[in-house]
Every structure is written in structure tokens, then in C-alpha cells.
Image (spheres, one colour):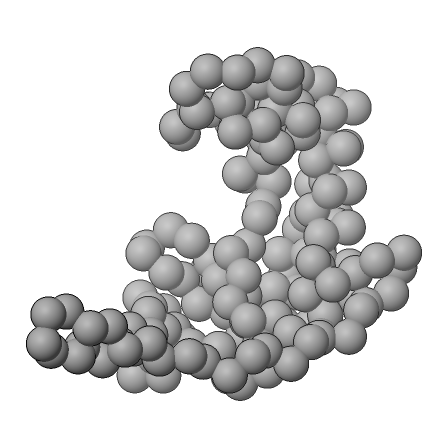
Length: 162
């Protein structure tokens, strides 16, 4: 697993020529590759990561300070995090019996470790965020194709699986 700061550095130093030669690369050209690099860089601009781990043997998850998550960035600054509402446990009447709602066990736990010994857990105040890499993006011809659920910008039909 590549540590977060090294991931950022290697993304900044990545060259189209190196990726173009890899099997499975579909990126159209050097200009599109630069757009992909810029997207990754902008996604992580100002993001603070406490720890990272691998989930399901493939996905790198970064524990991002909830105040610096990319979805809160607007016009170059971060918006404040709203306090979440209190959880509501509903009771459901089925015939003469009342059923109480049950919580779902969390996927992440300090006790669960990845193959590298990292805890698969984000501390309070941090959110788990799947790392988006150039390796993910270059499987598409363009950045717009990456954002289209059908795999080709402007197309419709069945979603494309990788």
C-alpha cells in the first residue's frame, strides 16, 4: 500500500508515456492524461488524511478529516460540517407484536487489520474515502468517460463494468 503523501507525490510526477505503455490503459492522449492528473490533484487539494488501509484486497481507503473532505470544498475553501441529526429507532407493529429496529454492525473496526497490519478504522471526526488514482482513471479514454456511468461520455445504455 502506498502511503498518502507518496501517492500525491507520485501522481504529480506521473508521465503519460509511462502509463500509455501499461496493459489496460485506454486514455486517449497526453492532454486527456493531464486532465486526469489535474482531477486527482484537485480532489485531494487541502485534504488531511490521518491513516489509510486496504479494504477487500484492492481498495485503498484514506481516513479524511471530515472538515477537509472534497465534497465540502467550494471556491477554494471548506464549508463547515453540519451536525448530524440524532439517530431514530423506529418501532414497527406487526400484528400484535411490536418490533424494535436494530442497528447494523459497522464495517470498520479497530480490531480488523488489512494485509499490511493497518487497522481498518477511521477515528471519530474522520470519514473513510476510497482513494481515486490515475490507475483508476486511465482505464477510460477521457475524464468525461470516467464520470459517465455508461463508460462513454454522452452514451446511454447498460452501465459498463471494469
